[in-house]
Each structure stands twice: as structure tokens, then as C-alpha cells.
Amino acid sequence: MPSSASTPSAPTSPDAPAGSPAVPPLPDAAGRTPLVAVLAGGLSHERDVSLRSGRRVAEALRSTGLEVVLHDVDADLLTFLRETGPDVVWPLLHGASGEDGSVRDVLDMVGLPYVGSGPRASRVVWNKPISKAALLDAGLATPDYVTLPQSLFRDLGAQPVLDTIVRHLGLPLVVKPTEGGSALGVTIVSRAEDLPRAMVECFAYGETALIERAITGVELAISVIDGPRGPEALPAVEIVADGGYDYAARYVAGETEFFAPARLTADQAAQVSDAAVRAHEALHLRHLSRTDLILDASGTAHILEVNVAPGMTEMSLLPQAVAASGRDLAPLYRTIVDTALARAR
Image (cartoon, rainbow, N blue to C red; front, side, top):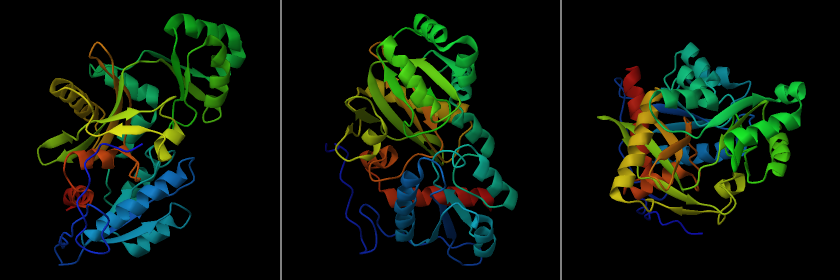
């Protein structure tokens, strides 16, 4: 289905992607064009998405005049970083290692600046129950939930625990792994008899499940970029997906309808933008993030989760938000890189 996001302007050079006008390179103190290492791939379930994101960001940054090298995350990574000596690294890794803070720990140890949040903040966001607790402490709304390990179902008996969950949270429910992304292992449960299967699918992706009350309303994604005056929310993107915003709905063209900007009143748009910026600040994130939430009929914005490494594919939500803002992707990506470089100098 077509998106209602605004159409990017045409490129100004044959090698630049659409919406990426040429920008003169910003040399360092020695007059050298900065070298950016984009890390993509890895071995998580989201490897393919990461590679697609990495290629698109690398192309956009090259169109601004930067030198860019794209590299997988493998046993050669440390040797590559040592021999290449990039000025800044952009980890475009999704899933484990890419979002759990471990690769960022390595980059800190080798002394390389990078785009995105630090390892501690990344670990908090990667663990959904911990991040939900931090959001609640900040006065933000998030669906009621319980967190239960697979071992508990063996120890107490699966059916008594499932019955207790339904009595406590009601139906419908959302079952998801406590760690992971791209909706892998996520199931919306409307009938109690479907809950056992949802738990099995969840435990295929992790040992602990987050079971939360399903919220009905408008599903939105709000990207936040650090600007000169602090965190700034881009226009909200509305997501309309039959059967839920699952993996196919995210990455298969035509499965989902997007509205960018979202069909919200001015007050609603301001409210969800404020919630995303507050989440960005409460979780101590930097450079960029994306908050996924549902705005219910009463006007409450329920935060589902926050992402430290938003996807950058042709169907991803942050690029759609940039287009809806009337800005071009390549200069914005360049600004993010320049911000990371400025911190290091």
C-alpha cells in the first residue's frame, strides 16, 4: 500500500540516492575528510534487515562527501578497526550484540567514537521489562505486564500459570520475548486457548517472556534526533497493519499502510512527540532513537518499546518520518555523524 509520506527531492548527482543533495565534506583539523565505518550484518535473527539498513546509510553518507566503508561484524572486526582507523563508527546492527550494548562496549574499549547510545543505556533499552520500569519511574504510560521465565512454567505447571495470567491481565494480550526486535516471537492473543502456542513461539526466541495487556488505538512510531537545542521529535508515523505489525508487515512491501505524518490533531501530535522525547531523555539515549506507542481512545499514549538502533531500510519508520518533516535523509544522517564527531574532538 502506498505511504502518504512526502516525496523526497531528486538527487543532485548521479551517485546520490533520492533525496540526498550533495553536501561538501567537513574536513578535520588536518584537512582530511572524515572516514565513517558503518557496521552491519552480525549473526542475529535480524541480520538481513541490518545489512539493508547499512547499505542505505552508507550510500547516503557517501553522497554528502564523506568517505564510508561498510563492514560486517565478525572475527575480523577488531583487526579491521585497528588497520582502518575510522574517525567515527555507525553501528547499524539489530538484535543481540547490536542493541544490547556489547559492540558499543568494544568500541569504547578501543577508543572509537560512534553514533548512538552508550552501552549502559543500550542494555536498559534492550531489556524490555527494565526499560518499562524506567519509563514508569519517569511518569510515562506503558501497558500493564508481567515477566515470566520459561523455567517457571515447568516448576509451577504451565496451565495454572496461564490461567493466572488471563485472570490478572485479561484479554487480549501481547506475548513477546523480553529481548529482541522486528516483532520476532511476538503474538497477539485474543482467546485463552491460544496462549500456550504464543508462549511456545515466544520461547523460541528467548528464555523469558513479557506478557502485557493489549492496548487498542492508533499505532505510532516517533523518531527522536538530538539537535543543537536538545532532543527533537520528527513527525509521528501511523502504522495500519491487518493482523498486527509483525515481521512481514515491517519488511514486505504492500503488507502495511503508513501515514506520514500520522492522522492526528495538533494536540495529539504534540502529546506523542513529548512522550517520545521524554522517553529518550529518561533512558539517557543519544543521537537518535525511535519510540513505538499506541494512542488510545482516552488520549493516553502507551509506550510499547524504545529502539536505540532504528531500522534504515526503504520501509523503515525513521526515513519516513524524515520525509514527512520535509528534510532530506542524507544531510540529516550527515548531521548525526557530525554530532558524534564533535563529541570526540
